[in-house]
Amino acid sequence: MTIKDIDYILELAQTQNFNRAAENLYTAQPTLSYHIKATEEELGFQIFSRSSKGATLTPAGAQFCVTLRNVRAELKKAIEQAQNFSTRYSENITIGSAWRSAIYYLPQIMRKLAQVHPSVSITPVYSADNSIEQFLKGETDIAFALEENVRKIPDIQIHSFYKSPIYLISQPDDPLAKKDRVTVRDLEGRTLMVGGGSPAALRKVQQRVINTVEINYFNSADHDTTLTNVAANLGICLAPGFLNDHNPDYAWTLFDCEETISCVLCTHKDDSRGIVQEIVKLMQAQWANMLK
Image 1: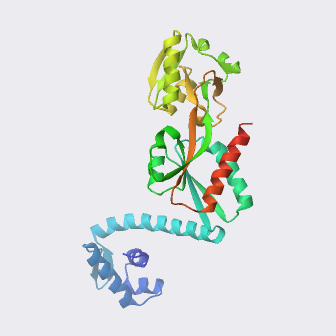
Image 2 (image 1 turned 180 degrees about the vertical axis):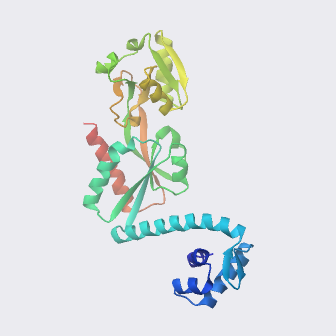
Image 3 (image 1 turned 135 degrees about the vertical axis):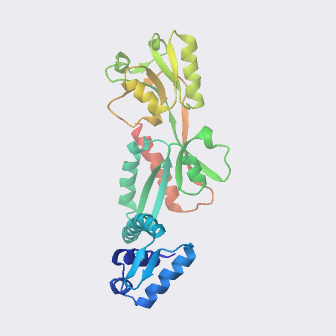
């Protein structure tokens, strides 16, 4: 079934008359009849009931047209977006990340790229559950990842990005938020949330805190759940800096530990486009400047 077939069906469903629908579609009535009949045969059910008075939707046809109208609307939107893209851009590079914190640095990179390559666009793709899987399927060109999660994956190029320190997240008015650096001893007597799919280095630090000072702790399902508990003043948590989206509702204070988490950028090994390598270098330089 083609786009033209969809338009034929929807127009006939609206007019319920072959001659009037053909006129509105700027086609001949026999052509319209042929396409409708061929589509019904392809689908395996009758969309219209014919009579001397015209054509009315069958129950199956009525249900089908409800979905078809939504499909046609989405298709129209996709075509318009593609047309807008084709008139302005010659290439689009997609960057995948599992964390919304990329919103903090990506806009600056996009602005810089637009100055140098106005015909190239960047499309951020956020997926908390399968950003690496999307990358491996070829759905994104560049992926932000933790080195520990991708270093054994074949056929990809890994580019160093930065070493993420570990921070304490608390409410802005928490006494710990006033410190330049928080130590293990500072957490004594507090409630610490742990777990939530933490990287290996962070789990190591969490365990050291639990073994060193008297502290209450409980497992949190994920980072968003953890932040909700911090906002409710039910606890504090340790988190890698790459999760910091600079929300003013939370205070991020550097935690005193040697552990860091290696963050990298991944590209496809067979992707030889110069613009991809240029964007990687631009991201590396931009982050280096932000850390100064």
